[in-house]
Structures are given as C-alpha cells and as structure tokens.
Length: 138
Image: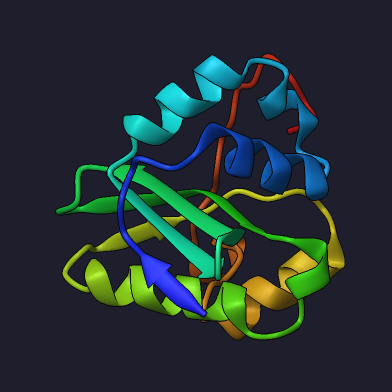
C-alpha cells in the first residue's frame, strides 16, 4: 500500500471510490467533487498499485481547526486498517491543530471506527454541534 498527499487525482478513480461506498450525491456532479478536492487543505490517498483504495480529505485553517470532510475506503479493502492509517497520518500532519472535527451519520459501525482512532462525540467533552445542510444524505 502506498500513501500520497496530493490533490491531483484521476477523476475516474475518485468516482469509482465514491460510488463504491454509495456516496452518490458527490458523484452526481463530478466537476464539483474534483473542485472540492482541489480546494481542500489536505488530501491523503492510499493506492494498491494503480487502484485508489482510500481517501481522506480535510479542510480548515491548519492552525486551530481541521475538519475531516471525507474518509472513504473501498468496500473490498475495509477492515484492513487503511482508514485508521489515514486518520493517524492526518492527525500527525496536523498535530499542532487545537480542534479536529468530523461529522458522520448514525451508523454505529462508523461510530466504533471513529472511537478507535481517538475521536469522541461532541457531547462527551462538553461540546454541541450545529449543522445546516441542503441535502441530508451524502
């Protein structure tokens, strides 16, 4: 497995990854998705040969806040520690950042994953979160 930090990723590989994990709202407008990736603060990808198997995308100021926007792993590669490695690498790259934020759906499997990489629900540490979105499903 090779890990790379660059924003110039092949559109077809990105679409395959997002479609594989059923994040089809993103793939309805491929140009918008690619602009979002280009405009991200940090993009970390995992490759098995020429196959894009995982992606972590973060936005923020890089000083006080880092927002993990997307973390995806091809279904066939899930459960192998790739997502954990991506999170570890991102957190190490931005160790000086005071606050790392991530919003996810109610999938308990995802909650378990985020807890294993050191994340806590906002209420557990005396915080609240507020969100406004045009679309409920990612």
